[in-house]
Image (cartoon, rainbow, N blue to C red; front, side, top):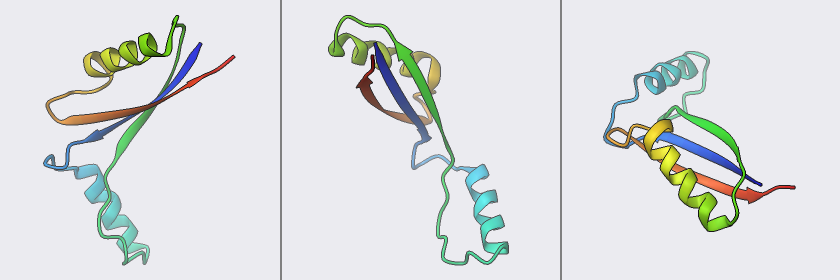
Length: 83
């Protein structure tokens, strides 16, 4: 069994209006040193797989097809074997 933690973020070239709003709020609260905020999502998946290589292949595929929009988003993941 493997546990994947998948991080999906907007590509640098894509405007992040939610990040801009949070940055504005932080400045209003006195956090003037904040220069940029980008918002993303974190997804955890438990996956039964025969091997680490197969688990990585499946996580890449489900991330590309379901969890992210490859036109505007990037993803990375961490994979760990669990009992």
